[in-house]
Image (cartoon, rainbow, N blue to C red):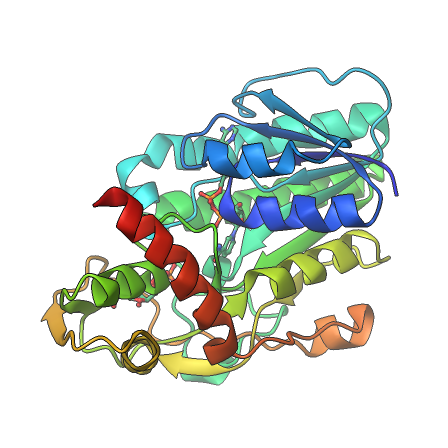
Length: 317
Ligand code: NAD
Ligand code: UDP
């Protein structure tokens, strides 16, 4: 339990992390500038008496009155179409905002947690599949995805520098593809695109041939892993994700089946030349040091996600 600052609190994943922290008894101060977030997430969290919200761009310096025990930096555009639209904001969220939030943690002698990503592994070759924390990655330093990938790699470097130089207690979670209710129907990620397309009877857009793989983790599982890491003694990066791996086409087929849609696939060119071909977390470390593993299978997690997005899609009509 503690007084906890969470950046990106209007976002999809942070809203689950805030829920989990509030359940644990923390007092949570959420910050967000709504660049990719939703006021609805803040409205839901604000029903809790221990949640407070401050509208703030966290790449600019800010003050928090009083003691702080934990700082979680989750603010960053995270969907590939978002970081293509707002490249400089994405770079700032990984760079300046990581400095600003580390400084806050340092000043308050608080524990700091960085939301890093599987993207720091880039497009891994077969010998690094599944991805272990020891793998250093295969990232294009200046390609279209680099504004996100390199900013997050920089964020990890500056976080470890604060740990080494100042003895700051830091945690780094490498999050793999996470999905669930509260995602924006138009966020452009594969799960939301396919569900929205299936529900509207539109073709499902397969980028490339659909043989690329991803491993999808349900949001409450990811949030549980993040909070366990925060409260653990582990100062080195830890993968959090679901090791069940699917091709993008298989994901689409499952969504067609669960929605009962008769949409078909269409193939469109890959928007990124460096789109990772395969991705699956090795979660042996999370199992060992956190006693954590995901509990929700893809089909089970897709059902409430489809129900939620059905409401969102209907609202937009
Ligand atoms: P999201 O876009 O829903 O949430 C990000 C939030 O950060 C938004 O509310 C946005 O408004 C806010 N934000 C961005 N820049 C900001 C700034 N300068 N100041 C204040 N607020 C700012 O994305 P998400 O999927 O919930 O991702 C949350 C975090 O988890 C990100 O750091 C992302 O890199 C990481 N992550 C997510 C996934 C995933 O699959 N969802 C995978 C890997 C890593
Ligand atoms: N993708 C797709 N159709 C879509 C959206 C995405 O085939 O409408 C593919 C994309 O090329 C990638 C995978 O699905 O290979 C996952 O994409 P997403 O944007 O969800 O996240 P990423 O893992 O690439 O960050």
